[in-house]
Length: 239
Image 1 (tube, rainbow, N blue to C red):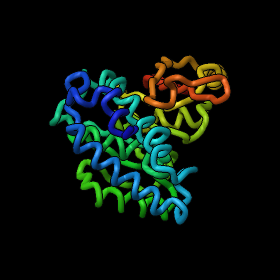
Image 2 (cartoon, rainbow, N blue to C red):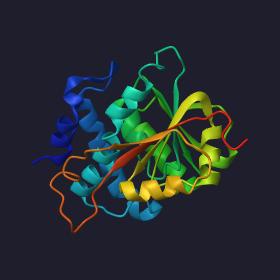
Image 3 (cartoon, one colour):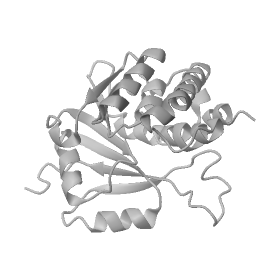
């Protein structure tokens, strides 16, 4: 079985859109993701990108995991987005380009900025941008703390940092007033612990994600729970 192709089908990419936002045709998306997986395998050891070189494990645990939130993200931005709105999404602490590269590949009409502090990883991200012809994506060597305030409509991150008071404040500052954060997380009980440690009231929700071949048919021997934490910006947060 081709896990990447079957996973894209199960996630709904054959429909060609989510909440009115067009996605790349599934055959083209599959080709781009295969090229991305090959690049990860080729450069993983040199740039310390991810913890595996296995094709199917990369496809499931990294590519499909990143794309599993796309229907929810599209639903959240559909009321704000238009093709001439200049809508801008940041992938904070992008690392190997996750989730930014799969998301930017799937949504060619939206603009993405991959924010990464390590020079060597920025080199890898720019290489992938070129081989995948991602004209809607740019790479910025920077830290979240140094980003311009009120610059982005959405900020996503995966395996970045725990949600705690200081970092939450930093990430909310870089959002426009109607923006939101979307954090890829694992167990719901751990998320609740993180959020309860922040003294300010935060408008957030936890959305369970289904990742084909990962969260499906899981057993108690391995933690496979995946959730998306969506945090709306509160303008007066920590004033």
